Amino acid sequence: MPDPAGLPGPAGRGVAVVTGAGSGIGRVSAAALAADGWHVVVTGRRVDAITETCDRIEAAGGSARPVPTDVSDEASVAALFASVEDNEGRIDLLFNNAGTGMAAHSIDEVPVAEWSRVVATNLTGTFLCTRAAFALMRAQDPQGGRIINNGSISAAVPRPLAVAYTATKHAVTGLTKSTSLEGRPYGIACGQIDIGNAATEMTERMTAGVPQADGSQRVEPRMDAADVARAVVYMASLPLSANVHYLTVMATTMPFVGRG
Image 1 (cartoon, rainbow, N blue to C red):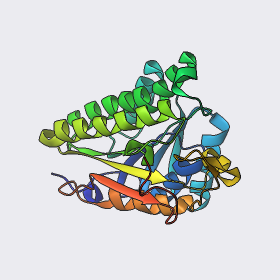
Image 2: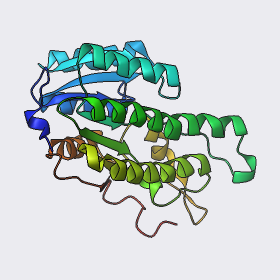
Image 3: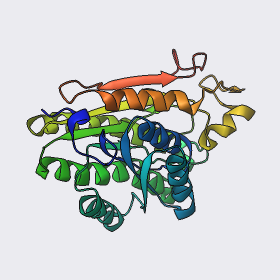
């Protein structure tokens, strides 16, 4: 199996695609990968946000290109990977980071439209990007590559009143396992990073208190998103003969162990 460090790419490491890279974990991970020598294709729905991510990367001496993408839309994902094939010539790393949540609801009060929206981004979007990246990795020469899925702590244990997010993240674990298994003959490694309470816009509500399993409402500690980015870079840096199948990185004192 080829070593990513030896694969061709504009910045040395190879070509990485990061979804949901207009803010939060996606933005800091894209920047960290670029600093480690990857050429990063930065994707997200907001053109201004992904352009800003690329500007920051290039100002720091890295290499990046923005491609507006809605991961929940099949045609948009197909256009993204066609663009990668046409412009970069290959893909060596996909970080399936794009995700969304919804307001807290009891299962019997979840609006079906909101359920469908979360499933479309968190699960279908991850599948569509995996499907397209897998096809390109399988066909390219040298063959192979790595896919990292953002699973979340909720891929292992639920938060109360968050059935859509929990169900999709549990499903991502199944997708990770299937991709890892099916990728073996083609040098495609797949792993998952489960993140707990990175300090991003998505977790800002935790500073005011969020529901706990015992019915209480408590403020939860958060960690710097840069700590997550370092973990992503580590997973990405391994040769394809080695794979971090699951990695959990979390705020040390968050209420995770014993939850659920």
